[in-house]
Image (cartoon, rainbow, N blue to C red; front, top):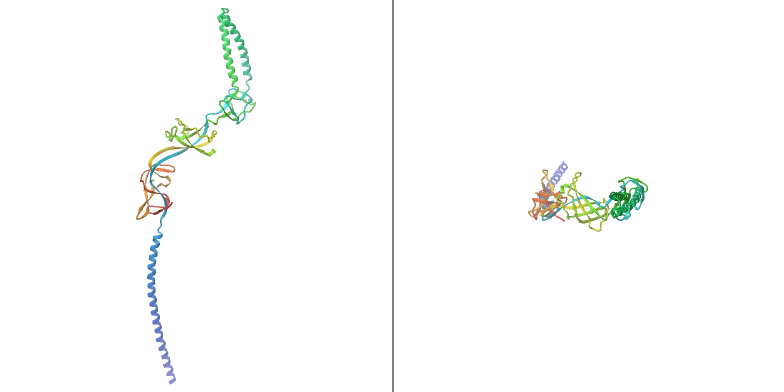
Length: 379
């Protein structure tokens, strides 16, 4: 019995010690937890402060600023040029035709050959007229002899006046017939109307041709001109001696020339008039119908505000505006500036109102900005 009691007391003592030891450990752990929570709160406070500082710095650095190119408004000269299609022509580009019908007996030239004015190009069969001409010549010789004899006798008082007049009339009539026959005979010979080059031969040897049938073409390429077709809307814009630029793509040439003449009649078919330019440059070796482009100044103004046409924008109400850069609180800020245009051009336009000298207009990057955006200028 004593042993049992002793065991019970020992177990109670051990349990009491164990409980006391557990309470102390728990208390220690709680103190450590409180300590760490306090330290964590201090660290969180520092982290929060650092996050705010970093956010503020990052916000300043990463502020979205759009790069643009600009131009400062100044007054200057404005020229508007227009281009017109043109073609090379020659006043000496002639088709030589037969005036009388007949067979081509001989062609005296070849294509590409240089000929002089009056040179025989081809001969047609004029044998019938040739025979008639010879008959008239023979008759004329007889008539001349008879007339001269009648004239001597009449002066001597021999013979009647009627005989003298009949002989004279016969002689003069045959002279006129001979001239007429020789003229007809000459029309069977085709001659060069001017010095130039045989460009083409249309008929063959032995071919039968009628009056007006083309036989050859003769061209003088040394006397060429450029003819530009200009819409009637440009009437009275150009005058003689105005400077123009002449471009001939086929020859890879661009020349500065002057207008030699302006036609005064508007073509009723295509509503155009013509500018005539005779190139002075020795570099030009034109051929008929070669294409050319004429560039001429159709408008000129001094001391005006000019901007690139491409930067002009429009609203839904068809109002025109551009973007300008203005300084605000140390930064460049975009402003939408409404303007009025007095003259539109392909590349540049004249601003009537809305812009002033020294205004800074956006010339690149203007499609990426809007009112109030901050920008920075780059090359």
